[in-house]
Length: 114
Length: 114
Image 1: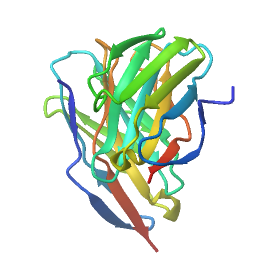
Image 2: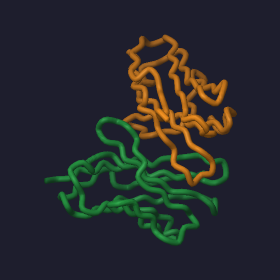
Image 3: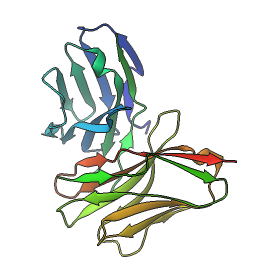
């Protein structure tokens, strides 16, 4: 398996624009996590899915952020409109149940909002 | 709510010596898993070691071992015979069986000196 695949690897956008980050989890994994990493706040869990259903989105910072998982092999994280404070590295990770199995991370998307 | 605390923002260790990275956690669940990840300067997240809450033996993986003290709710990572390539950020994480949410601590930067 190619592992968790995220795209794009780097994104530079202007404030106010819509940004869509993409993630393809490892085939067969039933959990998918979205994290945001910044120097100030560390690695924050934004939202996670189980069998394509959002389980906990309490980490989503505000209504500008939304995430979907239309099928088992694809998820998106959208920011609309984007702001400079959204600049961060966004990671997607996937895992199997039960909780004893580790999560496998994608390479991350480095987002810069200017 | 589950919480992970890593009190050491940064650590130095001499090459070939052992180092302990601290991690304490808080949970009301009886069943949970504890993980350590390494993030080198290149940015990827690398799984190192796992400890289950019901495991009686401390986990070991090569030069990594986990000093699990359940009553104290601590899960410290011990790296033996440090190498220059161990210089990285290290994250402690916890996953409760109920909900399978995976939450990370703030991380500890480790620098290995030659």
